[in-house]
Length: 344
Image (cartoon, rainbow, N blue to C red; front, side, top):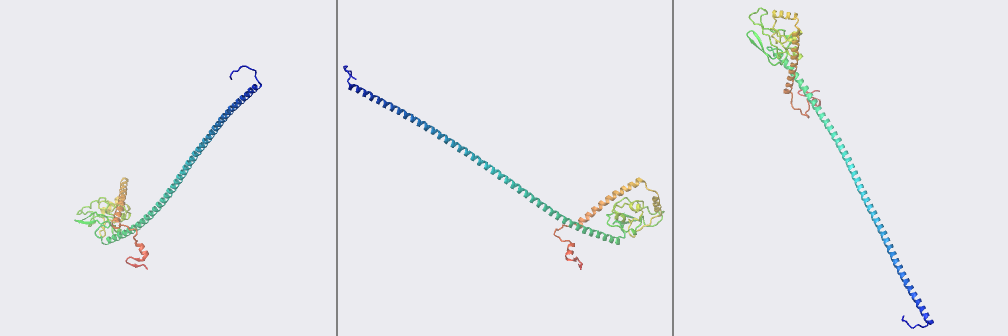
């Protein structure tokens, strides 16, 4: 305000000043209110911003929690699925293992059953084959025995110059008869034999024209009936004697000499035999004789067994056809005996 000369204030001036003061106060009041309002607006805006931040954080927290929950649920689901798959795989493997064990067990049972059936069939076939072989062998052995008996009977009838217990050939050298040992094949007749063997001729023991028959050495080729029937070796003993150990010990006639060639024993030989019978043999000699007889018996048994086996192999063995019909079955089926017609 411009300075004016001081003069007394009029009522109008005071009123003007008062109005100005009121206006100024209102203006200041308005400014203050605007400032307050602006401050309130700013405060409200800040509060709204804080509230929005809080809400945003809350939403983010909820979102994170939802995502975490979803992730956990997804992991649990995957874990459950993997566990279910693993359990299913284990169950399938267990079922497959059980099925495989059952299959193998069934195969083993089938194999064992087939093996038992095959073995039973093989045993049955082997038993049938063995039975047929035994039957054929029995028939063959029976035929062999019958042929042997018939051959022996025939040799008895025509064997006048040979030893009745063997096929020894008899040679006449001067006035003495000697033997050439051969393989035994037949037995002689005990009724046409004597217990001695010496050169035919004079009965006197003073016969100087003939030399005494040499003592036969123990041999296993010539057999008498007694030794042949018992299946033991026949051994000659004694000077000028044709009696074997067994017949001499049993005091029976020995059939070692052939039919129609019975030789009477000389008085000298009879006297010597009577002396030998009266004088008991030494124990050592008896033991040696018994041991020799036992060894000869075993050897004879083995030789006879080998001879029977060779005869069986040579004469009777032939391939056996499993489907071949035996003679007995054919006779039972047809009733026709071969070469004789039907039985009825």
